[in-house]
Length: 107
Image 1: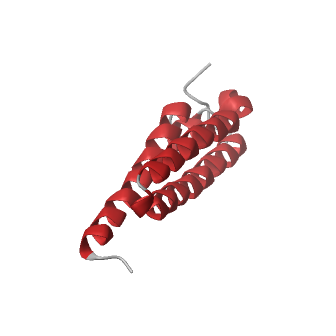
Image 2 (image 1 turned 135 degrees about the vertical axis):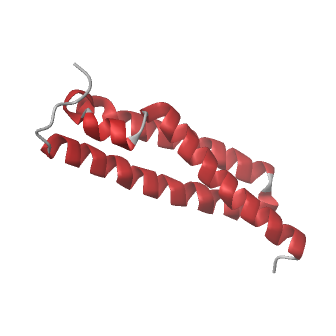
């Protein structure tokens, strides 16, 4: 059972995992909106960079969980939640962009 201090730390760790995963994937990939707009020219490499960002983010979230085992589950939960959400966003962006006949912003 978590005491009040550990409960507060668990919430912070959860959000830390969410933020870390989102930032790391965004750093590797740009944004789902840009990916959708330019799927025609980026589709070949888009998911490669999403996967690399997820590997990097996962490794760092795991390190944080090992450093702070008292809140490790919260780090993992936050990172996992954000990884799933972001992965689905990029999968949708790629699919919608490839289905669109609108021109992208890159040549």
